[in-house]
Image (cartoon, rainbow, N blue to C red; front, side):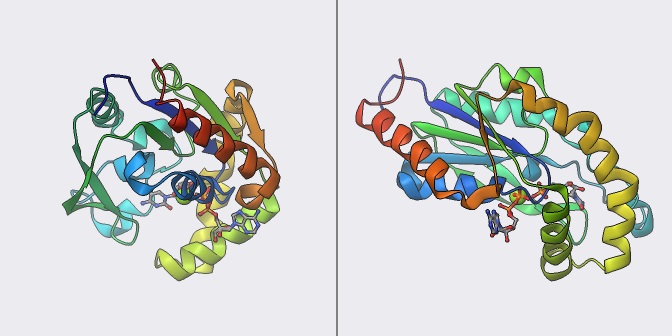
Length: 212
Ligand code: ADP
Ligand code: C5P
Ligand code: MG
């Protein structure tokens, strides 16, 4: 491992905008061993102390829903060149799993999540700040399909959560954080010209050996 510190990319955007798709493109542009992806979703606080019904009513779109201190500690460790045991999260149970996943340090580090640009301490760590943009109706449709297929939700629960928490928190925290972006990627995560520019940047960084 060379002594240069990794290049840190932040990828923010609303739910269903395509953040994880952009993060996957960054990994594909390099090699998995050369990118450490730390999704902020893995750092949701565990809600196993609450009865199931109460867990479903926690506001998961507010900054307080995340274990920020653990996230910052793990990012610091990765930046110092040390592996971490990243938590895993169950969206079906609203709990942190007992298993963890080992993430090795790498020359490119990706921080991905709805609020990664909202938080100043996270922003300060980033060399490149990206906001993935998509129309709210498109994001909602993607969210509805994903939450029913992958997260064990019903149409009614997705609609209620969207109206009561996701939408107001998006307007208060996520959308205003767009002002901190260096680059805004429109039309979600399959915008090939934008992804080509991003991956070209990563190739040149890796060819140059990262950043000093
Ligand atoms: P996020 O992580 O921001 O919630 P994802 O990357 O998981 O969003 O994208 C949500 C869904 O939308 C996924 O099924 C993904 O394949 C799809 N998707 C993302 N961007 C686009 C796009 N530009 N066109 C079509 N589908 C897209
Ligand atoms: O991948 P995406 O950006 O959509 O993930 C963030 C979303 O996950 C938030 O909008 C939040 O409402 C949702 N979430 C949830 N249930 C949890 C934790 C997060 O619906 N237990
Ligand atoms: Mg995602």
